[in-house]
Length: 254
Image (spheres, rainbow, N blue to C red):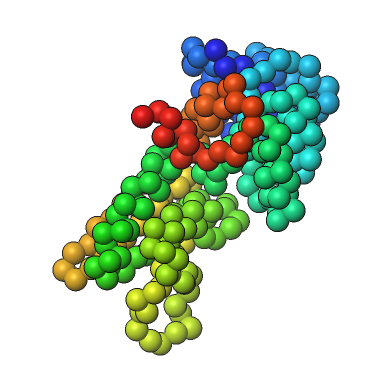
């Protein structure tokens, strides 16, 4: 049994994870952290980590970047592994996360989906084959009309996976509207679509002469991210320190 503290428990992802864990025989949430207690949880909810006295095996964070300092301090003091799912950390915060990983186990990933992270591994193998043969690489991502950033962090993560496997030869191109020239072979195009209630779609296209290979991932609900976070918490249980990614969770599951 993995005992979990959930920060941001009343948010959309907090409610999603609560539902997922409720059906999981190998995990339970022993405490939640949020500004207010909406009275719907079957576990105690504290307004701050400082008030939380629950014994746990891991913490899952889907809250806000503003909570990071308090969260890292708490996890270091308790030697509590943390799954950081919040995005938008600045450079100083990212450095603090790396420093904290020397004292307690921390897993941070741009996307918690097991599918996306497995796709990244597959892309690295595919890239070695297709880019050596001169295939062009394009990424198209689609999200709902309320999403603020473009391209998505996941699209950038996929691009980074491709580029790393290709030896860093690609330059990312987000807009060709101001150009009137042929596509450069060292371009990696990333396009964004925003509309409706699309949860998340990502296509990675390898386009060669007379042949196109497309790797696609579609998220139909936010539950895929919650399931990945819970799997990560189980993976971190019992680990003293270290910086981990979702790729480590996937590798351990083999």
